[in-house]
Image (cartoon, rainbow, N blue to C red):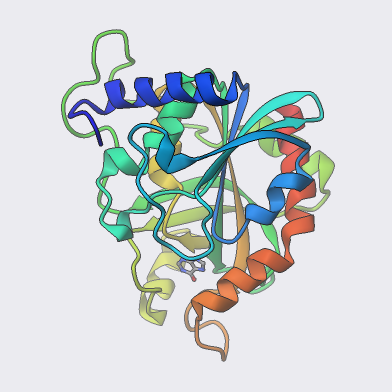
Length: 272
Ligand code: HPA
């Protein structure tokens, strides 16, 4: 980060987004391997490598292009961020949420967060998109810790009831009848989970498991954005299938599911 105050840094990045890419109503953060979705969302007008915007780190994980795109999505001005910073890369929490804060401060009223996830629901295997209904933040971190948000910002104690917009979940269900919903457990990650951890998470009410999204959702809600979350199931969680987990297969499943995902995301963006 270029500033010790994450909100000042996010304001600067929001200004840079407006200068480089214009104004947008909706922001979309894409998870692992989903850059191919971008041209299917509408007309791509412009793009900028995210590291050229203030406060954004170089992307580290293979499959993340690290681009911010301006897309005309059937008339909705859409800011797409293809690439994100993860806690497991040892990025500090303000860096992990910098993109969504910048997007909201640049004018986006809605933030759509996507991710690749392991499924704890045996009936919903690889290739299934799932709307996030709620989350368990098990990262041990929270973007609302630290110094008080500066004057003019909402206080830190954000209400997270209905964090994942019921309105946008209903729009997704109308566009893709029968689309499942689930509770996403967000972990620090690095490694995948053990089967014992998955058994514990299931008893805690998790349906999905992953290494992103929860901190961004909290930060976006804090700044007043409407939030939607979409998980693409790339694998059954550890211990639920005979196969070992493999990051390359996670990426490959993400790529193979791009058309289904694009259809769902178009519907969510159109309703935003
Ligand atoms: N666990 C955690 N993160 C993931 C998984 C998983 O099984 N699949 C994709 N991201």
